[in-house]
Image (cartoon, rainbow, N blue to C red; front, side):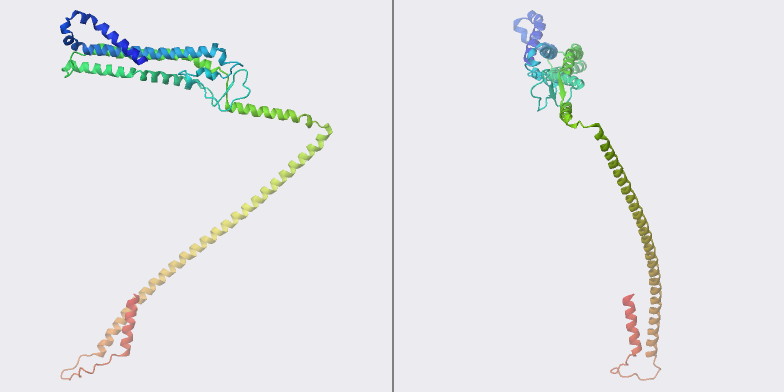
Length: 368
């Protein structure tokens, strides 16, 4: 509704602004003469549209705030025993989110003062933030910010057109009027925001004074009432003679002494158990350290023995190799000249000692 009304007003205002120039033109040359005026027509129309849309949005919010405040203050059906649910006054209002959300469970019968159990406390700061959100959302819905952005773009195009002609633009863009329109609309938006805040501040104060109680406070109040009723019911039965209180006090003192004594004994046993556990832990740590040290010494001894065995094995191997070579030299000495060789069919048998030494040498090589 606001968009349509603002658009109609903008068209009428732009046509009224261009009417003197159109009246001076001949009818046959209206359309060719109208094209150069098209950028000025668009700028005027956008400025008037943004102005009317912003004023209408702010006016609706102010009117709704005043109307809701009047309903809460002067309309009996929303307060008192006839209808204590004052939250019904917010039905159909854009400020319905300002009202605290009611709890699912309400007192029955309803209180005469119209107290409503809510889920949380009413916070004025959050209410003011909600009013600002409604203002900005309303301005965005009527395309106020879009009109301001287009006017800013027209300013940039007008400045660029002063440097070089723009293709597709039939006439000159009024950059200075468009810049003044943008500045005026921004200042007007700030002023309208202040007007909305001033109009809704009494409404926020009125909502804060409405009879409402958070559910936590209601539950605590109900618990206190139940305890008070139970104490009042048990009070006549609790009356007893004055002399009967002395034995009860003595018995109570004995019970406290016995409990204290048992507590001290338990603490003593716990301390003794803790000391024994600490001693056992220390002895276990010492035994573990001794075992680790003995294991390290044993590993060192084994390492030395392995080194010694390796050295002796190498010496033994060298000795066996030397002895084998010596036996082979003794077994086959060089034949003197003129001595006849033995037949090849009768090979000389290798001595048993050389065979045994050769086997021993192979075993040493295998283990080495």
